[in-house]
Length: 193
Image (tube, rainbow, N blue to C red; front, side, top):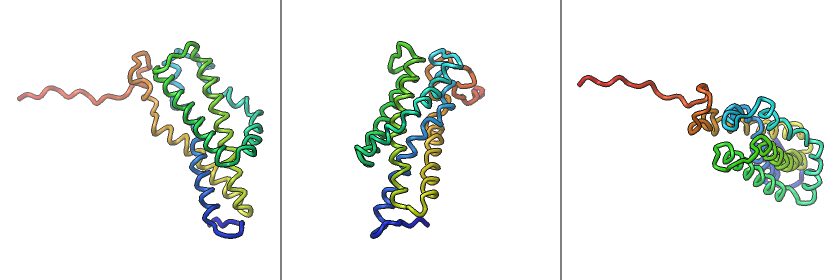
């Protein structure tokens, strides 16, 4: 059982932990990329290296992640979580709109990398708050609370797999490979009545 090392009520630290658990789920969206990368490749005729760049290049910007920590100190935890979460949500929606061709992308490979990179910075801002806030409230159990928050990050990828099955992007795109096409129930033979 987690107990707060701060004096007074344990309600505020527990609420902060619950908020950080919830927020950390959003940062796991990159883990779901493998589920829809094949469909993206077919939608936009991307090469394997272009697909790989969409999910890999953003991590090269990890060197700039400390800037999110500085921003966290300036804005505070609540505002950082709000801005970072809204940023992630807006960019993931843009990714979905682009992937389903509801928004035209003039240079798809480049634009998808930019969207992913910008999403990464939203995730870095949320992570800065979600991993540090519980430690402030649970000094003596900081390893456990960080592990707990990190486990919720993995849940984000799992949620993507439930919400966006690989076939979702191929329903309206005949150029998708047959393996990604939604399965159809076998045709029933006509009845002899």
